[in-house]
Image (cartoon, rainbow, N blue to C red; front, side, top):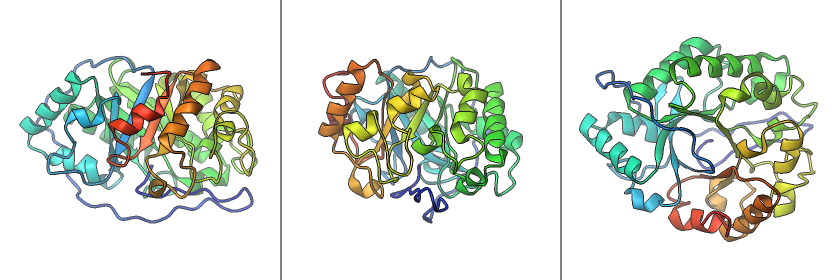
Length: 321
């Protein structure tokens, strides 16, 4: 996930990232007791990312996120906690604890999202074990409920030499050593084409990651946008077509990924992505169609405040009210 835009080129071109700036770095708080066992992963998952500045309190009153059960603070990067992640970590300890208690009472988990579009961990030579240990420490020190892995090293994935897949695999395994399953949430946010067979990703991309460590991942917040696809229910659910065939929801399931780990990710407004926006009411009809065919993973939105309680209520259709 990244602020405002994400983009994949056509199959004949290299994937590219748009540059955005991030501010407000903050150190890890080390004077907070580690979080005890939290809860099992919610199912279905209704996830909202928050990267835009909201207020001095960082997160809005929980009532404004009614209908969601996970909020992802964005982003924890190789250079530290930035934007909303950094702002939350910089809050006084009692204010962080109060916000956590408020959200827990409302049934909302608070996690942090790692990397985003500005980071290229494999290409930059970051050590996956050390990086995972540092980020796991951030989770426990700030009493968060888990972490989302928004790996977007498109250069590494495009090389097709297996280095990207190996990096993500080791990173995920190391996270789970400190953040055990059933106690902490661990999600990933892959681009939808990475979950389909494609010669552009010769080492398998996230199909390989899923084979390696899918059992450690609670669900995938899949980005069904910025590829010029997934603009109606048919393309989103059944037949993606275009430059990345085989990457709709039920095609991904046919590729060997657990159907009920495939959370449908969409931008909150057209301005939150290059393309792929579906208005939430229409998205709700797609959700109803998917539910009728056996899917029940949930919905992800990027980002608050563009997607709020009214947005997710509409996006749930009639299936999850």
